[in-house]
Length: 463
Image 1 (cartoon, one colour):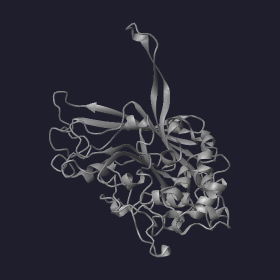
Image 2: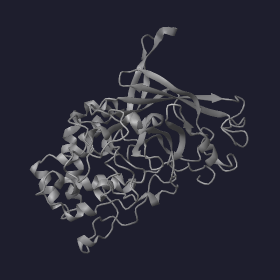
Image 3: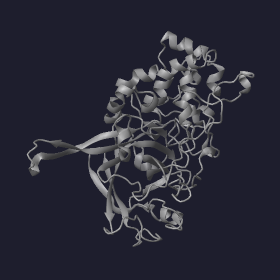
Image 4: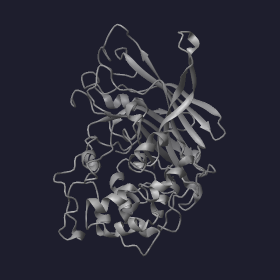
């Protein structure tokens, strides 16, 4: 999955597990960028009496780099606090919840928003903003859509923010992909009757009808661009930003064991999770280094560049599907570094490789979701993003409907290598490989406005 349970230690700490990150120029307001960071993945809707929530002891952050050094020039921090109204009941709600301050809602959660500039100066933008409740069921919450809408806050500094439960819109056939990289079959006209994949059955969206907790923010473009400019050209480096999210916990040290109050010392926040590009830690970083990767800043990602320049899946595909990836096998055997993947994932795509497009942030190799904010939203989205000719899609940022699994598979299979070596001919299978799923396989309906993700599935109808 994009980053659900992608490392051994974070799989044990779901409230701090950053599962998906989206960044795109807002279709409902093209003068803004929308960033959505999902946490607490794989939520079963019927989860009472202890419904899911953000961690009061976790610092959630969205970082934006505007000058290409892989260090944050702008950070938004989100801290949460849970309040219990009635300590005499086991119930999440003792009656219907019709408003964000309804007395029947027993366990409420609030959050603050703090902005940190590149010099480390912190400014509190908002305090005690309410999260909506979890979607218990239609009897408990007759109009969940209104409650969720009421939880969208417009800050005095121009940003919109939302934090709360949403439906997980990521789509992946998890069972087949981790069954030795198997994808379910389809016929492609370019393969003239050959079945590309040998596993029978229709692709299944493993994350459908599951919920997450989302932090969403919509930011005016001039606040994130390098020089604070409102007007930029598509090829202007000042239009490109790098985005990642992180979660941190307080370091705790036990000095003695004599029962005294000073035995436990609370230290600084320590990063336990991060996410930039989808699937980076999932399928690029080796198991032995996944926890280390989660603890490091993007500015240290040069140490992982070798796994990008020769990804393990590149070696596996020709073995799993004999005869379909012969050119990829030759490329792999020659040990040729994958300069295309290094650009896509670690530096951004430089000007001159794709007509009228670049999202390069410089020479520093770092896993960030890079977005050229001068490219407007597409009138008609292509789920394959830049690979499908839609310059407003992944790996130019990431939209909710982008098929990042299939895009990544095609890139690793060699479809993008001609960008850096015009003599290389990709295998026919490279342009045809896909997981067989789309946003249509997500049962929830995307909103056409902020915060865009579907309303969460309720526990009554989705047991």
